[in-house]
Length: 197
Length: 225
Image (cartoon, rainbow over the protein chains, first blue to last red):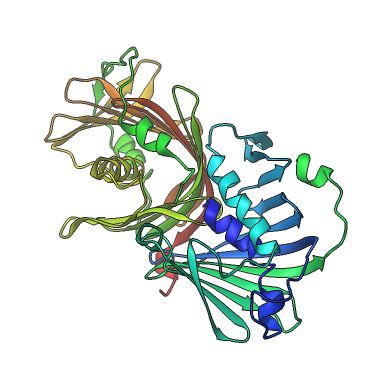
């Protein structure tokens, strides 16, 4: 889960150069912040129709993140100053969920800085390929990870620097698609967005 | 990959826990066909798919929230668990002919006992119990009940008119309660009575609670796959 979440986050930063047709290692683009709405479609073999989730997302360098689901289960993940907190709606109220281990999230968070620094192809977990100018394909390097995620496809919008879709393929008939809308780049975001629910 | 989620769910289903056992209560038997019909009516009729938000917790306070999918078509059951973020943790199907097929199970959900326990929870909630015989009657407090005695010695009590919806209680062959399920805010959908909220308390080898809030109920008879 954490991997998925962070990949979705990180992927905002990758396409900037890929869309411009430049090698990933060159001319790093420094994105300070990203905000967007997202629609998430969960497809499963047994589902007659996808489960639709909606929410918003905000990231600000170096390591502040807010990932918020509004429907169907309101929840907020906050990362700021090295701390990770998660709030989930329970009995009609958003309450902090201290029951889950969040250390893995922090580990993956560290990856963000790598992406921001343009070290995309250095990724330890995924091989990267570019089937076309608007698509980036991530394939797990390790067998253990490949058993859970077969590949991740990033689709770029026409506008350079913006990501349109992320699709995480888990296996036959099972995928999660994130579609981003209303993206805002490099606008200063108040810290409270990353600390307060 | 480090998965943060839910080793606790597995533990909560299969770890040991000490606690006072609730025993099978006495039944005052009656012959009332209305009770029988009420008990049959609590189970969804036909083919359905349910999506629930599941908040689970165990005795020590650990737990989490996942999304659960349950598909019912006759004796066939399929179910899946995923994180709120959409990562599939577990997917399995069961039919009488094919048995249990686990399609995906991310550690720690890859233990066979977890699949069996989860499917059993689903069966108890959504399918009428297979019974050697059924008795009808009243429990203390004048609650009407259908008591299903299974061939394996286990007993299932169905209270079709409890808490504005229904209750199901299951007992081991030694008459100790191992599941108590309460449906709330039942809504009539076609011929079926669908609870908006289900709470399952398990007392198997552990005490655990599943609070299931309905997100989506789909009558598959009206859907083309």
